[in-house]
Length: 258
Image 1 (cartoon, rainbow, N blue to C red):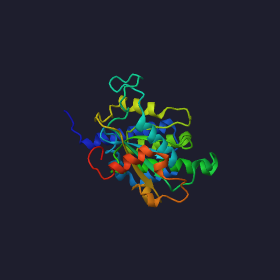
Image 2: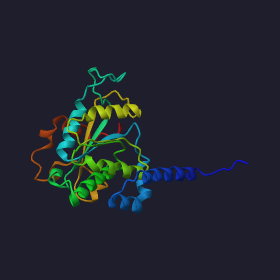
Image 3: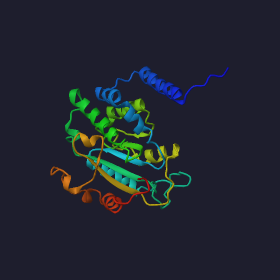
Image 4: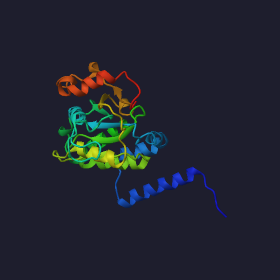
């Protein structure tokens, strides 16, 4: 006799299996992750189900200047042949058709000012997780998360993977503490391996979002020059002209990649 089980039964088994593997690996989740998962699992799982689609966005988190610098690199990147992925320039942007979203975190102090030991180490790990939480906003449709700040990478990257794993968010998380690490190459290869490129024939689009205060850590705000803290040394247009121009040109346009 063949027994029939509802689909949610198999989903529960899959989730249980992933949790068991996480525990067997011995990873010690930080309290913030435990709090988020236990308090908002249903909502977070629902948001996670909307991620990882080719039509989604590449989300950058970290300190504002590092995100802007990474956005500029990705917009202008031409390291690969877009047809066969050979490491040869082909005159086309590597991230053609992609939307690159910079989540500019103006809430936390400069990460380098936080010690890498003791209590401040936990603060850095929490900053990484909160950035990953903001990337789940349904308006973004995250398909790849890039942690641009080396200060967050040593431990925060693993915490983000742990957090995403618990809520069923299967998106590539790219990070490294090595300042010589090629994020553009890593992102390109991950998108190709997972078949996550949009395959749209268009220039990359940059979007700017901002995190100011605890509320916007869940729902990032559309970038507004007037809300940038006075402590930010110069205008975004000076630091990242291509990113800023693309953002201004496209922020009121709906459609491709949201």
